Image 1 (cartoon, rainbow, N blue to C red):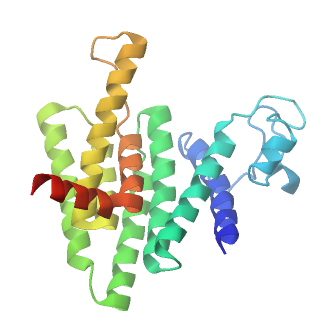
Image 2 (image 1 turned 30 degrees about the vertical axis):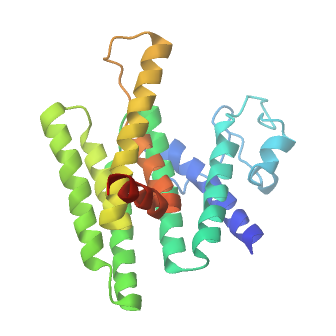
Length: 249
């Protein structure tokens, strides 16, 4: 079963690459068919097998030999591995499906934000609508989760909104991402996510300053930090929360 989950994750990861590339350029994600961005060669099925095709053609376009970014198979692998880890933790449950969807959405949003320093509202609106769908499904199946999700969304929105207003250290897109994360992860989940995101952002910022020898004005996308923090929370959020409670109390 886990091999099937991995395969699904890899296939969806391949589609995520399309979304990352095209949304950032405000292109349709459905048309035209996948093609080489250099020569326009329309990719055949043998060019679209996740990871394997990249290795088989040695990371170059079959026609023009233009180098293909290593990021494509990395995104596919990361998505597949995340799906497998979530499957091992939750099994085939609504939580597993919900977290897989959130992880994939955050990969797209995070990568686009990393590339462009911009969060496209179409992605966050899609994420919010999807989140509300899962809230409804969870309520129908288990008769709970609505209040936790809505309060989580409000917390995510409120905290990042205050940071934006008071410091201008983040962008409006970060407010939207945090709201999405709160809707999917609930109160405890968004709390852990925000803590981890700030920690990751701080460490990353220090590393950037050290490597580039800048003075503190380096622009850094916070979306990837929220994405990574959320994915860590999905995997180990409960364990992190327990460690924190034991350390404090």
